[in-house]
Amino acid sequence: MLTTRFTLLCLLTFIPTALIAAPKEASSQTAEIIDIYSADHFNAYLPKEKIKTQIRLNGVYTPSLQGQCAQETKLALKAKAFVTEYLKNAKKIILTEQTQDENKILWATMYVDGTNLSYVLINKQLGRKLPAPKESWCS
Image 1 (cartoon, rainbow, N blue to C red):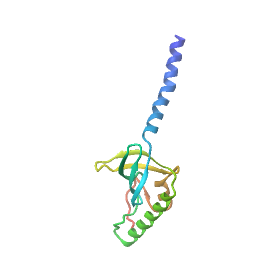
Image 2: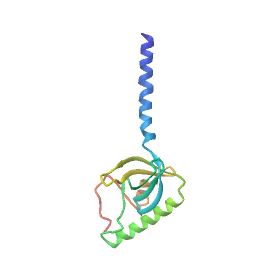
Image 3: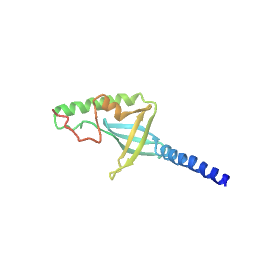
Image 4: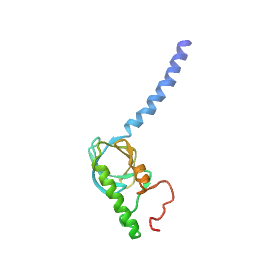
């Protein structure tokens, strides 16, 4: 009886930990950025899958290059230039929390040398946090 309880305790302790940890590793992968369309939209090569794909950033929206006003377009160009420079010196790019939409675009959280790029854009005021009502970049 004591052996059965001990076995059950071991199973309840170790199996859930293994199950929780496994998807985390399986759902992340490295990426090599090929082109930067905008501050939150990229073309990338995924070495693990040996494919090229489009990537959009989770958790942030950035001004559009086809802005509704000159101010938005100017800010979009500034954000794209920042991301281009930021990624130029990157040693490691990791994608997590990946989902693919109906257009085959991969939505992911991108970590550049351990830092979440979406948070960097938000902190630099080059992007705004999602999910939130999208506000105009024109004021």
